[in-house]
Structures are given as C-alpha cells and as structure tokens.
Length: 327
Image 1 (cartoon, rainbow, N blue to C red):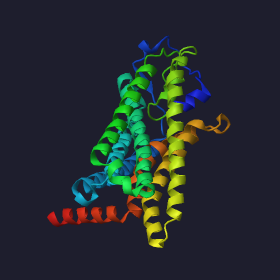
Image 2 (tube, one colour):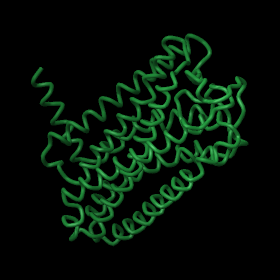
Image 3 (cartoon, rainbow, N blue to C red):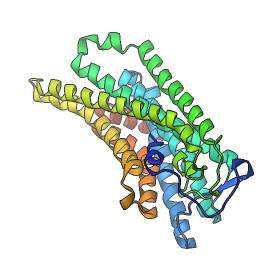
C-alpha cells in the first residue's frame, strides 16, 4: 500500500546532489515545526498520545491474555491487532519526539532502514489481521454452525502466523529493494519519519522501475483484500437484517461495527495519504495525514473496540479493579 504514492507521483529532485546511496550516511527528516515552542508542543502531544496508546493497547492485551472467557477467535485476533498498533507507534513516534526535544532532524542510514522495515511490517500485518477479522465476523454471522470447525484454535494460530510471516517477507523484500537503489537527489525526506515513497523520490530517474514488480504485487494484494472485505460485509449485513429479534440484530451489529470502523479509518487515511491528487497536495496536509494513519489510528483502535464490546469492557474493568486492590 505504501508504494502507491510513488507509483502515481514518481521521483522529484531535491537540492542536495549525491552520486549514489553509498555516500549517504544519514537522512534529514521533515521538521514538525520551526519554532522551539511548537517543537516542545509537538513533543508533549506525541508523548501524551503514545502513553495513551501504550496504556490502552496494553490493557487490551492483558485483558485478553488473563480473561479465559475472552479466549475466542475474535479476541485472539484483537490481541494481535493491539500488538501491531503498539509496534507501529513505537516505530515512528520515539524518533519524532527525540528530534522535537533536541531540535534536530537527522536519522542515520541504518536507523532509517530499520524504521522503514518495521513500519511496513506492522502496517502489513495490521491489514492482514483486519482482513482475517472480517472473515471471522463473516463465519460467525453467516455460517454459525461451522464456526468451531472453520475457526478452531489451530486454524486461528495458523492464520495469525501467516499474517505476521507474510508481512515480514513483504517488508523484507520492499526494504531491501528500496535501499539497494542508487540515490541521486540528496538526502532530505519530506516526512517526519522514513517511508518508502519519500526515499524513492531520491532515487535516480531510471532506477525506480525495479519497484514496479513489488508495486504490482501490492496493488493486487490490497485490492483483493479490499474486495473480500466489501463482499463479506455485504453478506454480513444481509444476514443480520434477516435476524428476527431486535436484540439479536443489535448483538451482531455490536461485534461488526467496531471492526468496520477500524477498517474504514485505516483504509481512508492511508488511501487518501498516498492516492490523493497532486493538485491538492501540500506539506501541511501531507504531514497531517501521515500523523493520522501512523499515530492517531493506532491510538483510536483500542477505544473503538472497547466502546461497543460489553465483554471487553467488563474484562478491562475487572483487570483494573484487581490491580487497584493490590496497591
């Protein structure tokens, strides 16, 4: 997904010329603000968001792990999703906070490669998990008699392992290919963290065609998952509307709407960030969109899931009550 932006925009020249990537020892990230006061404000905002994200996702992981009645496929995949949210925000935010606090914008070449790898890895895993969670809701509502067979503990473990492993391989291939390209257009990135489209803008004009194969794979995978999610929810809503009791429809909707909201937030921010028309692109808009999908989205996911799920709210309340009683 993160390759789409470059596919439509292509490389753009930067001011500092360099012969190839071997001469680059560091990259220059985009500063979040020009004044010291705004930099400290961004540091405080990122600190608050990251702490809230760590707390919320940590509570979900603890509640699902400790609550035996939550050892179901839906909550198992939710635990994995919380892990990807923690990984995503820990990949981008700490370096941005460090740069804001110490008034710098430098990131080393190896740190940039690690950031790209981890970001693609966690985002790819999250999208795979969201697709699997859609399948879980589809089977639960449309094929309830086969739920135990199709989504047994072994099947769930295999699907989660496939999501993590495929994202790892995809990220490894993307990162290795990106950082093997010669960079001829400087080392200044137009983003507050390292991402593939910004690095590809620095590549030589003839070299980015090596990415076309992976871009084609990305397009096919994302489009296939998107079609599957849309088709599944069409079937889900048709099945829910046929439920005779209002309480049954409400229960079905309460398990589907949080997932649908998370999917919509994830896809809408990412798609608009990388597929928006160049005519409406601006540094401030690009920065705002990148903060939305890389920082705000992982922070909102646990809130979205916990608001409408009574079982999860009860487990979280039990966990926090037990913790306070021990103090």
